Length: 406
Image (cartoon, rainbow, N blue to C red; front, side, top):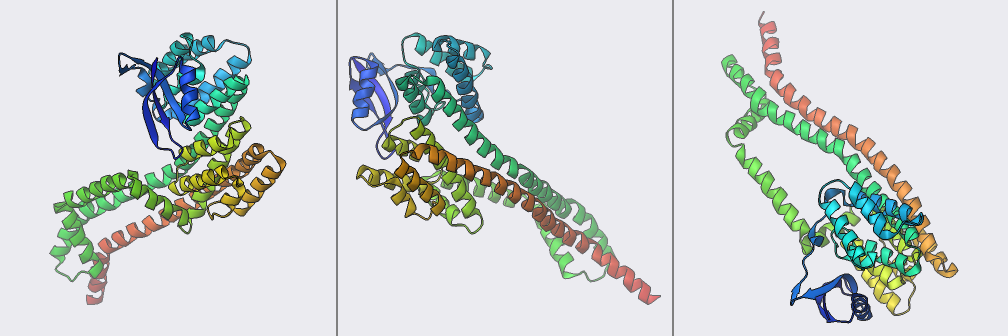
């Protein structure tokens, strides 16, 4: 029987094709024996791939959906509820939309005899490779509820980090947008009314006022030029950053930046430690844990470091030696990792280290936001003050001239 599959190679490259096996489980074992990390295996029908709603993604709330789903499923399974019944209950209470359809398809697959890990592999956009591996490890060890709880904790931590960063940036970005709008309104709406009055006074204007009048007139007449440039820069910059060369350049610049660099490195190190520690605690083999962590890393420099680590571990070298030689990982983390390797408990050590780094990151994000907001207010306040002063300065000069004439 033929099965179509999608997988990742040793270096994270996507691989797909058809494999012959008696059962779906046998097909997965054959692919794993080839050193592939399987994301999907399903029977081939009539030479064509069996279509399923796996392309549905749960949307922006993916981490929240996964965290809630795995938490609730862990509680139900731990209480002795059969997996099929637990999935039916969770799919019924899920809101209408793509996420509910994903859960319903997972339920149908499990009812049809597939393992839960195989069912979630049919939806790689909803359940990533880390989620699939932890569920598979839970089924193999007979501790599915424990693995689901760990997966829920991991998803909640990642959601918390993302929410902290976004929450800290919302107010500064909103403040910059509103202030920019006020400045444009002053230059294009308020200043032209003053310019007519300045012409009627027939008095020389200060240089700052003349410059603002010219800028305001140009913006009023050719507003589409800066708007087009802004849209083009945003669109082009976004496309370049999403490309492989652009992503590499941006990731390298971020980790080397004077102020932002240490923060980026701390966040990336915390993610690496949390994810790898959770995988190792779940009895995932070291090489597979490194490969999964590399696939989930958000920075290209860290992906390259983990690829180097994977090659070194394959040759028998310890993880701490490779990570310790890189400036991306702090010496304290490497020392803790070295101690964990000597004691044989790398997973718990990495998890504890991740907890400490995440606490420090929360403090840094809050402190940075509290410092950034007044800095933005002061800067934009000075700009508005310069504009308003330039508008009223000619009237002050005129009043002073009239007083001297009397």
